Image (tube, rainbow, N blue to C red; front, side, top):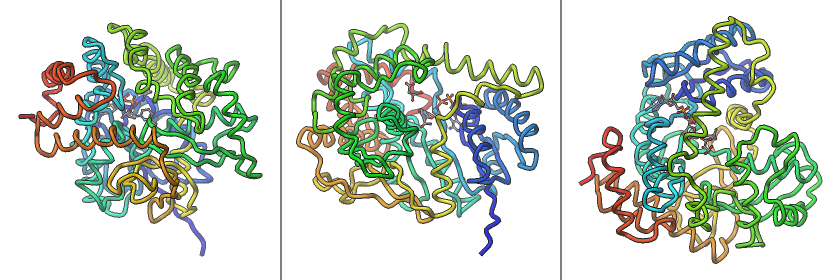
Amino acid sequence: VEDNRKFSVVIAGGGSTFTPGFVINLLKSQDKFPLRKLKFYDNDAERQKKIGDAVAIIMKERAPEIEFSYTTDPKEAFTDVDFVMGSIRVGKYEMRSYDEKIPLKYGVYGQETTGPGGMAYGLRSIKSIIEIIDWMEEYSPNAWMINYSNTIAIVSEACRRFRPNAKVINICDMPIDLMDRMAVIAGRKSFKDLDFKYYGLNHFGWWKEVRDRKTGEDLTPMLKEYVAKNGYWVGGEYDEHTEASWEATFKEAAEVYQLDPTTLPNTYLQYYYFPQYEVKNADPKHTRTDEILEYRQKLVFGECERIVKEGTAKGNLWDYSEVHSEYIVDICHAIAYNTHEKFLANIPNNGAISNIADDAIVEVPCLFGADGVQPICQGEAGRLQYGMINEQVTCEKLVVDAYEQKSYVKMLEAFALNKTVPDASVAKKILDDMMVVNKPYWPDLK
Ligand code: NAD
Ligand code: LMR
């Protein structure tokens, strides 16, 4: 049967710093994933306009046949779409700054995922993600949502509980980014040249094995040898534009690896294994947020401003540098054309990790197709991982309990149980400060 389908995509969080790069990737992939329509949706009209006006020029120059528009009206945004990309940051960087700085005041590293910062962010995100799912289901019932809005583990647990049948797939690029590094270390081009066994939680996982995708050659031993010495730091041209804090993170993977030399770790485990080191090296007045505002956000919005001013997108930043979101286009392709390619997703475990509860949200390899994702069994979690996963999953579930029951105590339990928080009195101080600044976004915890 001849297949002439073209797809309509809406990016929720059109004002995201990742949007222009993603658009460029979409345009580069028109042979693979052809579009008829592209829309942006955001609840911050002014922020979205800056990106939207630049993208309008890109679209006019390169793909005038694709209808492009941006809006803050949900009905307009979610009507007649095949794919919704979830790229929102509820509370924006202003709130991420609090996620990082409030815990640091009390000697706790407030990073954006598995610690109190991430839990605060997760509690902010749930309502907005559910709202977007509901609009999608109302206006385009056949659409799929590919969500990468953090805190993914918590958002995924909320989806499992509140919208179990929704066509939503929660993904993350961190393991992909690391596999791109592994590919370079092993003399391959990209993660697409690798096959892998991986299990854990979001930002909290381990590779059991990495192989050459074509020949099946086991690359794990050579990767371990490299990572034990250098972490995932590649250096040279590859890391020319890598920011200082990321350089530290990639290098620190050498230490992270020592905790379990039978696997290769996700870098974010550093926050879990070495919280004291992270706190000692943090500047409570200048965190990752400030770094992003000074670098990525400035770069992206500056480039958009330039494009609008000059009226052309010729020679723009993303033509040369952006490969970041290529895998998201690949995922859309896999679903649209039912290819059952292998990527990672955050899903209810249901046996994928054999010694972890069925209702835990885990991050495992899945086959992506028109029917959604089918997890691939990864066997048992090691003893260390078993302990860590159960503790962290419980924290994430407690955050969703707090949301559901509007419960202060549940949120306090989530913070107090977390490995990065030394005791319940510190948990309480962090929570009480966070309650104040998160008032516009959190449920009214009692
Ligand atoms: P950003 O702050 O630059 O952009 C987010 C946009 O979402 C903003 O324009 C904001 O106005 C908008 N927004 C906030 N709440 C909204 C709501 N309720 N409805 C509609 N729009 C809303 O953020 P960013 O750094 O570009 O990150 C976007 C998201 O992607 C975050 O959740 C981030 O954690 C996640 N992320 C994804 C990847 C990936 O795999 N591509 C990598 C890193 C981060
Ligand atoms: C991001 O916003 O890029 C993060 O998700 C990761 C980070 O701290 O840079």
